Image 1 (cartoon, one colour):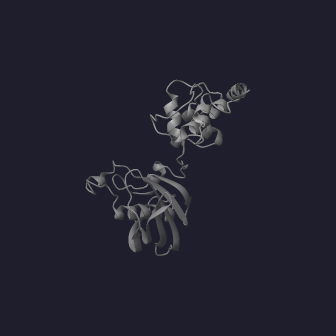
Image 2 (cartoon, rainbow, N blue to C red):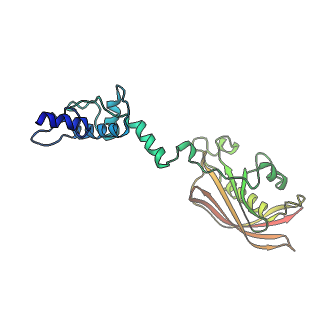
Image 3 (cartoon, rainbow, N blue to C red):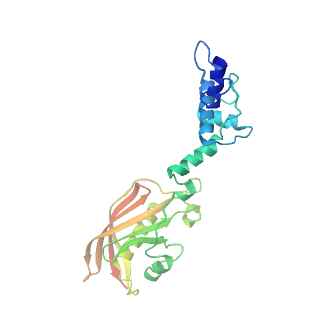
Length: 247
């Protein structure tokens, strides 16, 4: 009766073959439990395991490679890594190569160059992703090791100079305050107040530059604006900028 019951359990994948031998007076061994979990998963997915999947299953389930007291029949072991990927796909988890955020440009680099007079190596805005003329703008700067300032700042630890972060913010501020239909206008720095650097910016970072106009005196061509730079959710720089418009 016990043998028939055991065969029935094996057939239903409730207990893998050989697990009865692992169950002694002290109860189930950790190896037996891991093997049972892997075999149950194989039965649920109806996968066709290959030789060598045993160590993969042990690794994912938290066992030790080459453990001498693993017992039982692993002929039904599951391809654990493949099944984990399938489970992630079913759950809607995006692959890491598809997880970055792509912002549609409101202004691409060609449109930016029609407004800003800056050129290499001082054009520090790659894209504008939000824009309200005379109110605010949000720009992007992709920081790479190919940026020429990293050659000397610093050779052993590349960090984007803080003054260039402020310059990038000012360029976005100029885009926000200038009239795109009048490219003859220009702007100049008038002041920097309350500037603080919170965190270093390094190669590989995407610098998000947000500038909002607080005051704009068109008669005298003076604008005051609140500027903040972010990398991800981290605030890396903030300042209050004053810009003068002119020719």
